[in-house]
Length: 502
Image 1: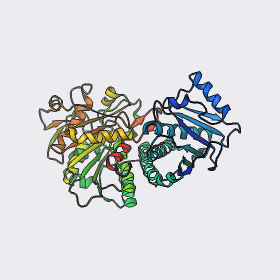
Image 2: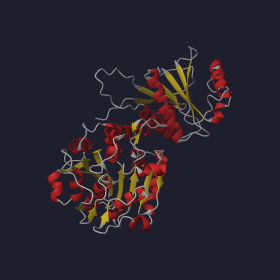
Image 3: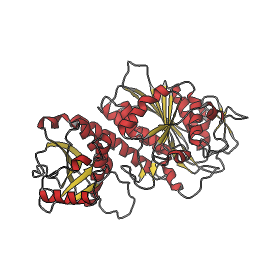
Image 4: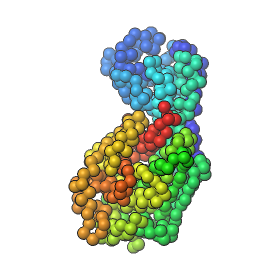
């Protein structure tokens, strides 16, 4: 189920003249200062070629730059890949260098890459970042063409260290980084599935496969059990589809002596037409990604299953397909939730917050005493951050601090939005406990959408993550691919598995 394309191992670096790995190319990462030094590649003609590129401004050593220099037999590699690291080597710049190197290798149809670990940087941290970047960079969306040509694959990568004693010490860092990257790519695969290949029932089947693979406890409620337990919100959102909803719950107990349980809730709308409040047709195909929050949590569980952190988790995924039909819920409906609260439905396209509210309540009932929800919740988040950052809302500033630190360590951008009483007041209803939309979603739409979910968290410490701008991209941007990005898998991995990743 989780296939490793790239086999990452270690070796000892002596010089560019010594290719003991049989690699087709070698990656050399340089800071801006290192690029200005003499003889950085150790071969005069290649150093002259690199210097000419620097003099013309074609390669400055900035992060994100990568050039492939053909060696013409001067070295025992077909190419030297030179990547810029910016002013200094960091995990982010090393990760990016490896992503772009992997993409270049695929473009050149080479299978074996050697990577020289940068000097003056912690070798475990460098190995982790480079491994993660390599596997992320090999990602490509699945194709359904009848006669799809065979794709080139990067099958082997060797991390070269100058100290033989270091090579054996890097194995655990490489394995942990592989788990994180594979979890991210898995979330991408799941999110990229077409709507006719992923419905609530098949999303539940995928969760069952993960649970069986790693030994997690799992419970799946069908539409009859959902209705019988009083989950009127989830029932309503799924009522317009021939594919009925599911409530999926997985449990991981990594610290049985602790009473602390973190609840993770992910939006699992497998396709979103907007319901009666129909979306515009242009770009609606992107709505296969509206279960990106669910995919993120299943990807994170893939990491947890391998690294086994000392935490307790209850993972809740309310899954539905938001369609329009004679049985669909309507604007103006009053829906009774699992919590007992009533919701006035003003917009059926604001469905994600309704099912997440059910998930939050159910996670609390399962023992969660802290909560994080992940959702492609609003288009309004794009107005604030474009597709650059994930928006966060919380009712507990102390709770979110270590999470934001984890996001920084993972290289994912998260920005906290305010939680002022005036925003919560915008959700007051004249006829119900709360309404699911405000009079204008153009005004603080991402904040009020998050605070709708927070209403059901009540006093439980809670973080909401709106990935409406970051879970899916129309074209590749930086290290992220076109289509699904698997955003927040790396952050959740850094937050949950910090001991295993350091």
